Length: 342
Image 1 (cartoon, rainbow, N blue to C red):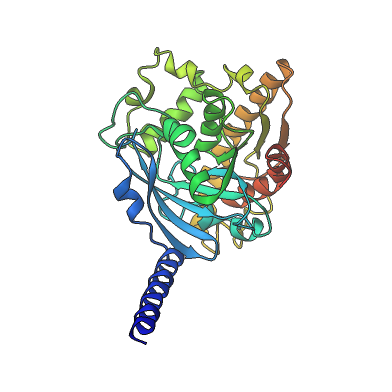
Image 2: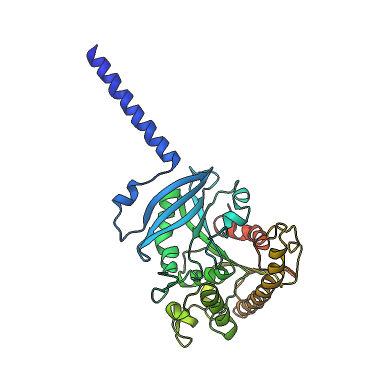
């Protein structure tokens, strides 16, 4: 009898430990991973369940020397392997309510789709590129290395990814996603650029880049790609290097800046605020008219190279989230097909 009782107690203790470990996993905390992983390897620092299928994750970036925040929405069936769609935020980097999760319906839209959605938070005004040197204001930015090399294998291991990736981005990141696909061949099966400016080395493109990095972000483009004469400006120009997009599925969209159906007082980005409406109709219209010109130039460039792409050029619409949500919906069939028809 004593042996039987002791055995039952050991079994009970084991069951309790198992239950506790399962509960900790469900509630989200992966702390031991960070302690075990060497600092020169990318790894999950922590992972927290924010909502059903939505996780807040921090991944250590060796190239940037700090953990990078991500929000992840898991595939419809988390027990089956799934491709990964990376969605990049605009010039604010997702801060202050400017993320795909804050401003669009991605959780609802992807609820029945077998794809992991990964949205990095941070990188404001960085162009998600590798900078020459640290910036006094914007800090260390080695985003191309992180996004294309460090992050994908970690996401695949953590969320049962199948190794197939696509990437999409808005505004500043509409340029970045094209740069990332060019600089990292084979990493992304498809790329979608919403209201981006593909050119970075001509006068218009360089002015657009500087308006984001310097005027908005307070950084210095010399720390990013050097002075205007530095070859990095051309090396990071998707228009110049468009040939390297051959074999990648491409989607490009923009409006014209002319007020459209969402540029109204009860529009999704205005929410009854006259101040926001004025800003959207003035600043948003000006920016979108510029990105529209860039996008149409990129169309001409790709067509001159006989590189196929899908275009959605609206005859109205400002530089705002409501239109980008529509662009994501519209581009999904192309992205899904490139990732295996999810």
